[in-house]
Length: 318
Image (cartoon, rainbow, N blue to C red; front, side):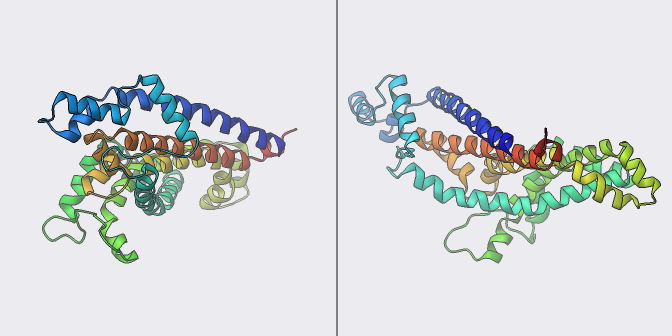
């Protein structure tokens, strides 16, 4: 198992380097955004002297590299800074919204992962049948449409004209579990439709690739049923690519919710990020972008470890 620990250490080191590069890109990207935050706060009627004084008070007049080093030093110590818009701690702001985003991602994953694996296995089992062609055509159609289009289609058919679900998923006050499932169903369904197609097609391709293996042919010659051959022999050996694609899509469920949250007015990180960009609240934008990047790195690391553990040749290599 020592090589697995070595791999985890190497991946963690590579992840830290990636986060450093991402932090640099995030900082430079936010610097390039048009507009002046001091002017945004004081309004167009503010005098140049007042704007300059506020910029000096907020440290916006310091050179960019000085501000980046100071910001990165605080981030390393766990301090994401304070919101320029309201003075609240960025960590607290992100923490409150992150719970809503994770809840929505979990809601979509509970639907999408079993559904995509089942559809992928059935499409491989009934390869080239009507079901296989229909599932592939539906998957390609779902992938082709942008998220906001899928969201508005669902709103039109399931929320418009007395539909069973609300078109706005705001979560004000205490929300019971059943009420949350009802209000968040359409954003969760939108994310499900977006990620299911990718996972279903990768599952189908991985299993079909293994069905041509000699040991699968031997299992067939022994008289095993096609479903048993897939579930008992093909699926365990296809776990590595399936785990990777599932992990990537789970990361997308966390980081790719910006458009969906805005469409449904869902109070998650994506909505907070859009609001912060509009207000030129750079510490919040930078903090959210770092959280998204860290989620991608951690889920990719988890996928690598699980894919390695699922392959006996890598676990017990000589």
